[in-house]
Image (cartoon, rainbow, N blue to C red):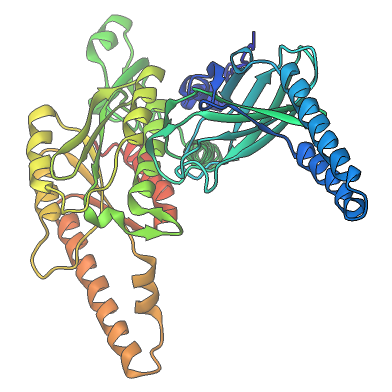
Length: 476
């Protein structure tokens, strides 16, 4: 039997701690082949070569008719050779095929699929295989070739680069196999159909997480600034020191010990952090081959990993015209895996999202104060967009970090120097739109919300940095 080897992240590694990619691998698929069609046999390439060699007898046959008989005898021998070669080939149901995923399929991540074919026959086989891989995984179906010794296994594989998140259907494996003589050929098919989930870009999220956490640690070490005492969550007791606040003196302990004892606080942990994600039409706009929603999903995953690493509880609310994904705040590896699964299924809709409906739903499920990271975009309209109204409503009770995905093309038009009337119109329109967006964001800031506008490729870094600032300044 073919024994698949599933890679496992080493203990303590960043991959194992954050995303547990081994658990996200699609399960391997193994199946015995079946004949493809009623006549699952064909002539090999060398059969046609031998057949064409028999046409050499046509030349002498113009002068000596007996050479025509020799050509018929030759063709009969070629057919007999084909039948003999065909009889040596194993039946289709004797072949076994395994498809195994070496890496977790992630958006725009290079991956590898391993294919193994077992040859039970007593002769060597040359196998040609075509896998029904969808366009979501690669542009063209992979074509593989194996040369397998008697009673052994042959291994090959192909690269993938997923172009869309979500579930995709991978189909059957089609095989043609011959002996090394290449005279006869059989056709077979292995039913390896399975549903494969394409996740967000786990590599980018992990890279941003490790880099940002480490850079913050270095910054704190250089400044020799401990986080202890900045929050209001009790950590320990110690003797009073010059500079401590009198309100932190713990009088019962002071009375027992006969000297001033003060309380030491740390940054609060286990606070709820919600990712509210707009999946409406504005997030369908593309930049560098990816939709804005893809960048928002990557930012949400990076933030979720940092927040869980910091001890907070993370929740998700993705919405379009209705609520698409909803996950209550939680923590731990199992919760992070569920978060990754939900983010993989978030897809943009072709209509405007119901922002006020999402606010109403969120207000019902989250009663206590929390950090709301709202990932969205702004429409250039004269009226105040509903998403701004919704953020203002949430800011009355929650701390809102309103993250807007910028438009690089709009910024480029606003910075350019026009050379003709058409460019002037584009330049003025871009400046007006940029100014309008800034007015809307200023309106949120004046009501107590935090705002950030970043280009798609910088969204993850910007959101995580703002979250770390919020934790350091104890704003929640």
